[in-house]
Image (cartoon, rainbow, N blue to C red):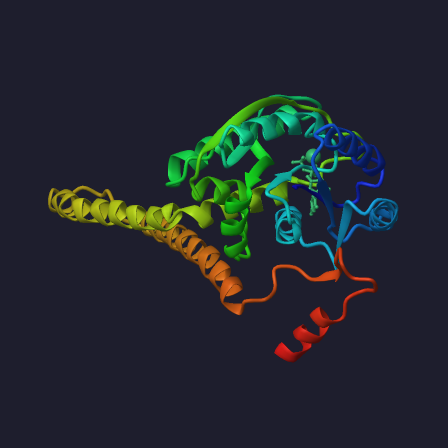
Length: 321
Ligand code: UDP
Ligand code: MG
């Protein structure tokens, strides 16, 4: 069986088209399949559309979140519920053409465990988005130990073994592209042209993109922490070198390095360096705190196999408090 996992947040305008295109493509494969539609707390009626579609077609399995948890978490929930031997992650806005899925499946049949779709072109996205995205991938590959293939998104196929490993990694700040590169296995890319959105606007605002970038960097490297160390060494060295220089200059009777301005600049500089270092520490500690609390990654208000809205999750939360 193949599982298709699609996160949905306010995609009512594209959903019917998405469902029919996926169904058509999967029908042609001649194997059994399921489509997991994870509603990430939509407010535009997407959840109702998903429920209706599931009533008409039992291969469509709805996972409805209690609120918006974010794209990466929605995909994670879909992977938790997926039962297939291979799982395909795809966006519901039709930017990832479902027609590429057979190519991913073909590579999987050749024996690859992770088949990621690699963007050759991107339509309908601003220069700024493309520039920041390409800068981001290059930065990640430079400073982290993992090798994330350039210009890949979450559109990919993963073998059951890979999905089982990823499902065991319950980190709250998730960067799935990185995690699926981290696990290893045999990986290969399939080039494709990323389409423009079928309808609506991107939900990845600049703020969300920066957050995802921070998750990727802190999730896979200590580089920012090390930057604080390097900065410390460099400034300490500068200070040590400056001491004899200042003494010599003063002994020669020069008026350099007198006055408040010099002191003030030094104090402000070190204040800045220290605050930045504290902030970097804070980023890691905040994430650590999130992990330690061990809250559930997401709260499902209705899963694919529930008849009525589920209660136990709310009860469990209550017991914990
Ligand atoms: N999405 C989601 N939760 C969110 C943000 C996005 O489930 O908080 C879904 C969205 O419906 C879409 C996919 O994730 O199917 C990708 O989002 P988007 O198209 O906004 O990102 P982009 O393609 O611009 O990177
Ligand atoms: Mg999109």
